[in-house]
Image 1 (cartoon, rainbow, N blue to C red):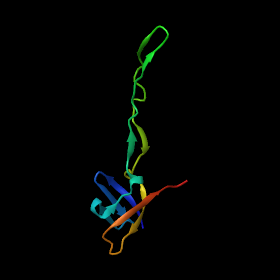
Image 2: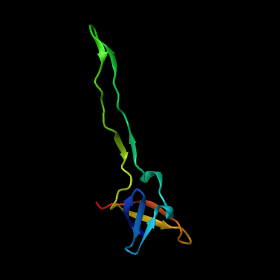
Image 3: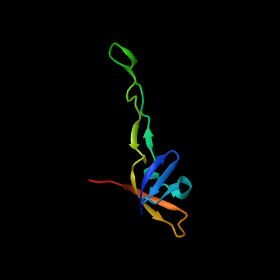
Length: 94
């Protein structure tokens, strides 16, 4: 089935313009969750005549995976009985 993420926190997905699934009915794989890394750092250095600390580098977090966002189209797999849905992936156009 196809759906569209309506809200992200809490997650809800509208399915084929018919009904909306709340987070309790959805299984979200790790690949669709937000993942970011903080690489902020400074360095101590000793030069020929000087020593000190470099200014802070990489001050913004690096986003590895953006996760689901409102408006994202998703591909769903319905489990037998229709009580749970696995979000397989985002649907993108090229």
